[in-house]
Length: 368
Picture 1 (tube, one colour):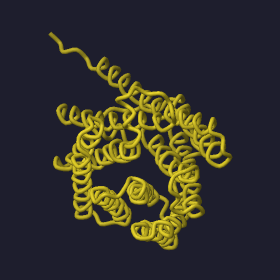
Picture 2 (cartoon, rainbow, N blue to C red; picture 1 turned 135 degrees about the vertical axis):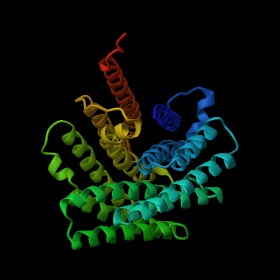
Picture 3 (cartoon, rainbow, N blue to C red; picture 1 turned 90 degrees about the vertical axis):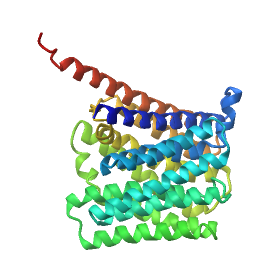
């Protein structure tokens, strides 16, 4: 058991390295002066964040839930893909590792389906296939910008499927289930269309994203737990604020379509990948990390600081920066977002370390 826990910490460390490299790339893109060796990370910022960090973290959590040794191949390959980018290895090596990790991730959902066939696992399986599709498209020469809808589908469907599973406790009606499936299907249709008709596909997918955001905001148990205190309220606020950014991102996709770069593209990208996805990561961390590491992550009121920094930074970046044209606000918002993610990682690591130290001290010494 100790060896297994150590391996999980090692895989989580790979994801953490991907996070640090991705945030370094973000600072490069924001125009912050960086050492020469770090400047090349700007071009790989998106892949490092979505696959090197989030792909490793999510696949590790799923491997723990599956409970089969081969499942850990997914986070291992994905984390190694992030290391390949950081070490400036050939791009083909990194993309091959990401594709292998995606294939192992899909295989996990085949195993989950054999254990229990359900709507929520099917939705997450489609998200896994979207990751594999994105990796194959990248291997085929598509740019990271061109596969954004596929990377978004991986993350959005994985998270939405998990929330759907928890919403079963609220005894969803058939009408509610149909509404969820309709929104998810519309989103998936748009993502598939984006391969041959990027502009139309993005707009159709945007409608699906807005529909999913509205559904989640109305049906998630967070609407009840937000009235509680302590960790349940913190988690609920993280989730509900994430749904708001999902709706904003979907509206941007619908209005702007496949915008090649510029402020509109920046707003479309970060409303989803930062506003929605990172809000969900912050909210789920006190639940997921203990399950992965076997060590409690006790809630602390200071966790609200990294959640607040994330949203203040996004408001500055997207509203004042992208929409109103203030470059100063855009850069300041981006730097606040980087600070929020670093603070999240640091606060979580410190809380876990302190909890581990306290548990070790509580173990009675062997009698002589």
